[in-house]
Amino acid sequence: MEKKAVQINCNYFKYTNEENLLEDFSMEINYGEITLLSGLSGCGKSSLLYLINGIVPRVINADFNGEVLFPQMMVNIRLRDTKWKEQFIKASWN
Image (cartoon, rainbow, N blue to C red; front, side, top):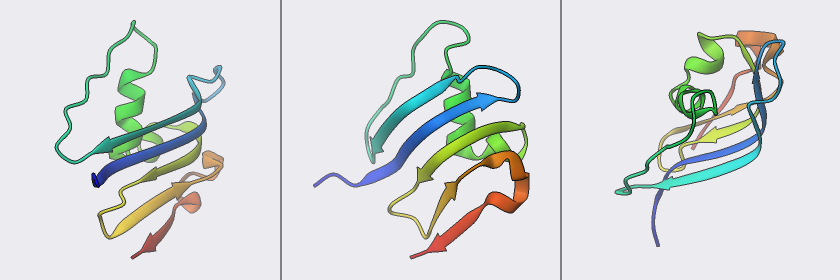
């Protein structure tokens, strides 16, 4: 059984006052996999990476409803209704 490194479940993601950039999107990356993100300019490649590493929404203001999970790590962060900025972060330790 492959171990998941990252699991993303996105109901929606958008920059403030813009249309949804990602909607009903999910993705899993397993340890040892090489993953290529490819697409046209503005399709969300960098934004997806910003979600994974936490730049969005902590540094760049955006609306995100979903979760970015790191199943093999000590902490999983679930983000809901990010209009509350820092107050929305709920962490659960395994």
